[in-house]
Length: 291
Image (cartoon, rainbow, N blue to C red; front, side, top):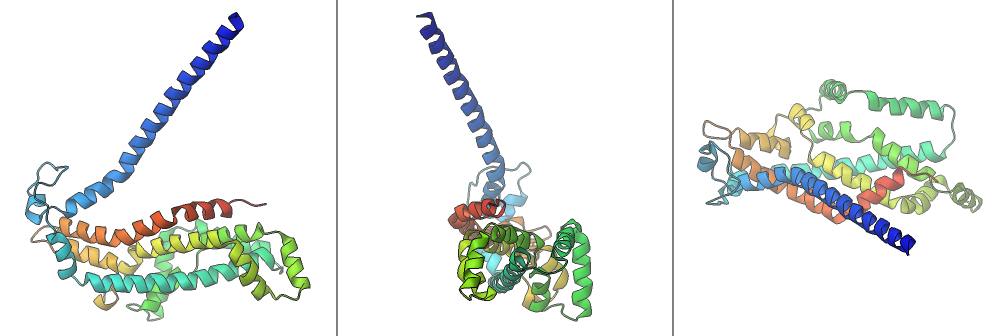
């Protein structure tokens, strides 16, 4: 009887601890979610405030008394935001396609092909990740300028067509594919090129989709390089447009119109990530797991 009573007390105590632990976890997650989502809320909120009301707020308000869509109209009429969106889409698609081709062949070479010095080359390749981005930007700027490719789409695209991280991620995924498949394909007379696209690419599809999505987000959000390499409005991306809108205030920065432009620019990426979020998580986990 005492044993049953003691067991019941222990079980009750464990349940209480579990409830307390779960409550603390959910409270911390809710707090973290609020911290993460608040900037998006503030961005959307500001985009519906008029220029006068925003600049007249000495104490920021967390609501809009008289919402207006004028900022969204101004975002497209003040500057050629539609053209900048088209330029950005073109830049993103071309860069992503070329990068995917380069990444796929490089990852396959490091994962399956045998050649002298492969491990040394790959280690040196990974060492490139240790170079600060600032140095890479400077080197790329000098190279593109010397090639007379400033204010051109090739100048925007070329420095972004290779990524050490994406090659490493896909290489790890390719290496997780059993060697028996490769040997069986070679016995059947399958070429390396055909084996890559008929076997390895379909198996590694979640990782490849993840790389594509991450690259699209990276290109779409690119800011420093387009601002540095282009000063011709014909080749401006959305990052240039945001800065142009911001500087178009009447004596002060036009933050509400800039926020409206950011909302418009962010929507495609938000939708893309929400649709493929499970694929992204699956691809990243597969890329980091061997065996």
